[in-house]
Length: 118
Length: 112
Image 1 (cartoon, each protein chain N blue to C red):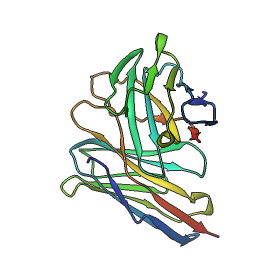
Image 2 (image 1 turned 30 degrees about the vertical axis):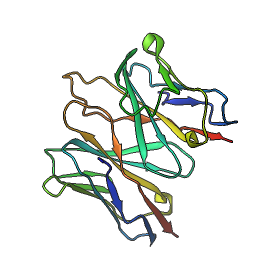
Image 3 (image 1 turned 30 degrees about the horizontal axis):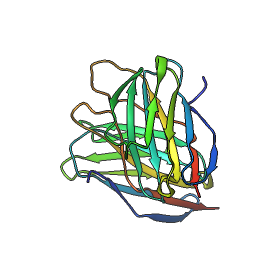
């Protein structure tokens, strides 16, 4: 079974440019999450999709970040325009829907996309 | 802040020794999970312990959870050089939220 995949693995852009990160979750996983780790700090939650709906986007830092999951399969995270402080590693994770409304579930992480904004 | 904290920040041991890492958190949780990250790679899930559990084992891993102290520990027995990695605890808050809240991690180095 293929794991969570992310593309690209690395991206180097200049301040003010746009970058789009992609995440393909494990097939059949309804839940998809974005996290990021910037400047060697803690890994922080960005948002959570259940299928194509945003369940929780409380961690999105500002309106320069736009996440989509059209069709409930893969997801994209666009940063526009990118700023220096956006540099870091962006992780995607997915998990099954265990039902019952409350998730006590293992999240499978992708390898991450390392974003460098110059 | 709901951030967990691991200690120590860095741990250096010899192969065959045991490694213990601790994690503290601040809020009520549904579960606590431990992850490993090898240099430059993704996070690998190690073990999940629910809030109503006190101890869990998986191979050479032993995790304890003390909800009264809001703390957890990860013990790796008979360590190997391949265990060298960063280890993170992540809490799943109670209240129906699925997001994980990560600590800063412990860097473990196991020397042959």
